[in-house]
Length: 494
Image 1 (cartoon, one colour):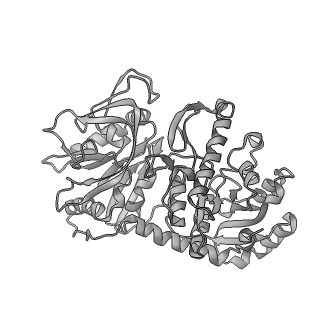
Image 2 (image 1 turned 120 degrees about the vertical axis):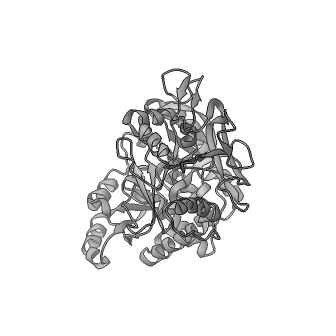
Image 3 (image 1 turned 180 degrees about the vertical axis):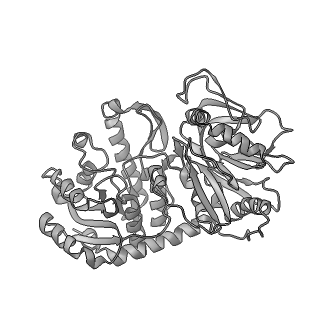
């Protein structure tokens, strides 16, 4: 089990690295996180929701992602409430103060069921568990679902990861160990220092000190890897530094207050000729080659945030000046004229009907049903030779075009998205499909529209799926992990 001294210590990527290393050694690693809180989601082949970080670990393990790997998913939606997902299906909404009272027992049952299903599918596999946040939140220890309760239940050998980049690494480790209960302390088999910059021998004295004072081996010092790994949490986006100063295209992405599925943008960020600039409400939109409105867990509230900050008016001016605007899922809904929420499912006051940005002639109705499915359909836009539009749907609300003369479908399968283009060069488009940029040929065709506007030569469309780049990234991560971490104390059979 990979535990961390805090959120953001690197648990998800270290678990992914461990999965890839085990796979290379001929084992069947089984990634598992009992409970995750995240708005970055994936939809498995059965239409179930799970955290994207466990999907990434599944790919590292050479397995198809399945909700059994993340049986409890909490999706924050403001006002101290979260949507509760058990084994891929929405089972309700809870308030933070009532969660452990109302959801502890059902959550533990879902975790037990997920474990049972995963191990039944892969007998002989080795579980690679990921903890959540810190394992020693003293106010939550008695009701812990996903850290040391699970480690004790499975008698897991635990690796404690601490992020030296954030500073205070000695206090992180010593403080965490000091707060463990006596029955939990023997579970910790070693320490991993993550994101170390510079020559490793500069940490030799610190390593020796930690081993003397904790009685635990420091199993490795992972270097800072200058790679663009997928962020697990939207807060990680704030730490991303501007890159590629010589990029030919700049794409502005709205950093919505309730942004979701931000991994949709990873393929664009991996394009050598593209620089992404994240724009929060209240910041200047600027003159980007394109603007992307990503997904949102709270579409109506994020729409109101755009309107209140003036960014909504900036978007309209950008479009009227010939801009290229693209909406993903909730971003698509915002582009429409009207959003109808008769049952208050979006949790936003102010009546049943809400005005959108009015940039596409769409009306969206919110109902109780949620669309969760993987999709592949022939693309109708951007125009050219036949391409597939692929990804997954994960949304409440169904949209329809009120005026077919003013917009056209983006794919042959109805309801996946729409687009319109004006004589002044304006393009407004959107789709419900998450992961749409993963397709190399479709992504390049979309980018080539922007390049033509700038008088740039087109890029080749014969590009592999982004999954191949992700595989290479996971291989490099695993190589660094094997080089710098002694796995023997974790992997020995008892």
